[in-house]
Image (tube, rainbow, N blue to C red; front, side):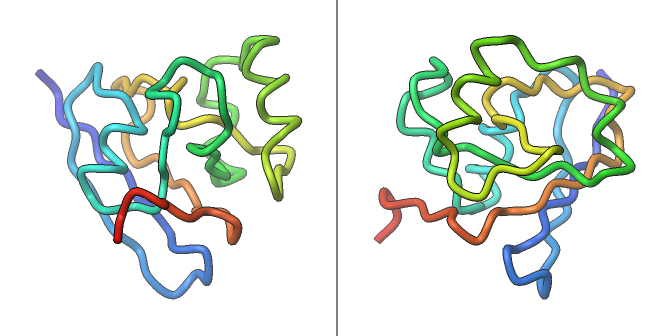
Length: 113
């Protein structure tokens, strides 16, 4: 199985965490394993927007198009931008190797004490 590299950039832009994942892994799960501030309260059921990430502009077109349901949830996300997506809806593929996502300033994982 091909390994996929993902770069998580902190909300202040000062820290980048590079993670290695497997093809087929969910971006939210990979982010949480690497201590990124994405709560994912609904556990990937698209009932919240606590896994909102901002995809690097150069990488955005490599992602499959968001569903209408995801777009509706992104409308509720604080600080949403044109390249915003829900990490729970991104399945990593070989085409996404090197993907860079930014943590929104508004991201806080309330489950981490």
